[in-house]
Length: 313
Image 1 (cartoon, rainbow, N blue to C red):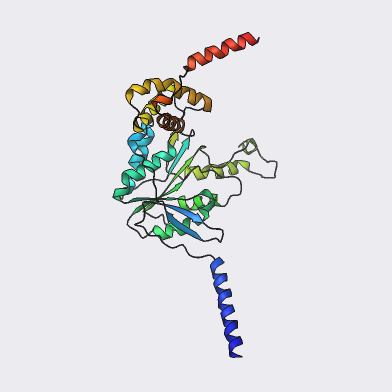
Image 2 (spheres, helix red, strand yellow; image 1 turned 90 degrees about the vertical axis):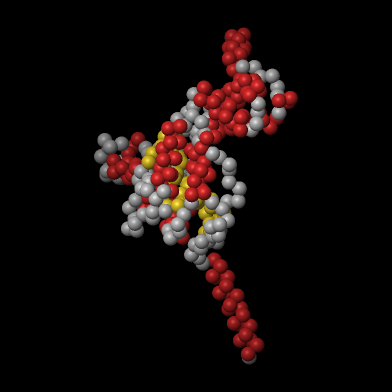
């Protein structure tokens, strides 16, 4: 009888252990000495954890060209934050590949020695933002919660969680936490023509669709600082190419030859962005000078295409 009872207790303990493993667990603090950047990850079991980022990109503010105005705004706001002065949550919006995410990473590298830390959170996990803020709220370091490529579709739960954290929660804002988010669109929720203020009734029965528009715009407005990025001109693109080629150790004598090839590279991708310039520089530097093919300048390509079209007709 005692043996059966002991086996029953053992099985009961095993069952309790399994149940506890799938129940939500409070978020615990990681080893803050392991890194200056952390990534919040949520497992299939529902447990969230802050994992240190072991390899951080060696990006500096000087590496980023042709965005001086945007760089100064972000640098100034981050400087205020690190020194304990009032600072704003930041929304960086605009053209893809223009340095929005890189600028935040560069700020981390510039100010990490002064106590700046970064926590990257995916938009699907923004509902856990209050837990993350609670974990870091009592620490002396300053934390940027980084949301990259942020936008929401209708009904996504992270929208209201982020809105509450930015401004509107009963709890006071935490002085050592700011949110920096990047997005390719300025208004983070989709808008439709039927939501125009002149409508008195929408197709789905909404009596005051104008108020829906106000609700959608209000999330962006809760970011105190908006920084906009714009597509680069050809000269700006070439300046960025030159900077990245230099960072990869390409000699100045080879950079003139790389210019027409970099323009073809951008033409093939349909974009003159900083990301495209960086990708070209990596490819060009990786191939070495001896293996580079002779590249026809873009102007010659256009002339040749026009000639071929005239012959077809």
